[in-house]
Image (tube, rainbow, N blue to C red; front, side, top):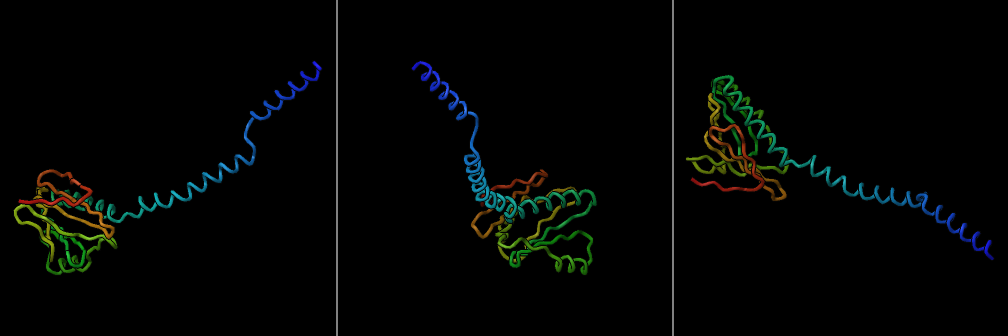
Amino acid sequence: MRSEGRAHSAWREERRAKDTRGYTLIELTVVVVLIGVMISLTVPRIRGAILTDDLKGATRRMTGIIKGLRTEAVREQKDFFLHFDLESNKYWIESEGMTVEERLIANEKASSFPEGVRVLDVWFRGKGKKQHGVAVIRFNKKGYVRQSVIHLSSEDGREFTLVLSPFLRKIKVLENYVEFEE
C-alpha cells in the first residue's frame, strides 16, 4: 500500500507540474481574439477623433496664419489684413501696397473653412462684435493688433475662442465660447 500511495502522490505532483507549466493553445487564442476585438472597436473612434476633428484643425490653422501675419508684418515693415467673410465663411489676406487687381485676386482665391466649421463672429475692443459682412483684423508693421476675438463653431455644437492680444504674440485658445465686452 505504501508504494501505491507514493506512486499516486508522485503522479499528483507530476500532474500539478504539468498544470502550472503554461497556457494551452486554446487559452492563448481566446485572449488574442478578445484583445483583437477590443482594439478593432476602439481604434476607429480614437483615430476619427484625432485625425478628423475639423474644428481643432481650423483653430490650429488660424493660429498659424495669425502668427505668420504678425511675423511677416514686422519682417516686411508693412501692414497686413486678415479678412473674414462671415456670410460665405471664407478668409483671405491682403497687404499694404497691393493694387486693386491684386486685392480682387486675393478675394477670389479666398480660403474656405472645413465643412461644418463656421466663424460665428469677430469681436474688436472699441468696436464691438461683427456678425455679418466682412470683418478685418489689421496687423501693423510693428506686429501689433487691436485686441480681437474670433469665435469658431462646429456642427456638433462645440465652440472655440481665439483671443489675440495687442502686444503679445501668443494667441489664447479657449475650448468654449467666451463673450467679451467693452
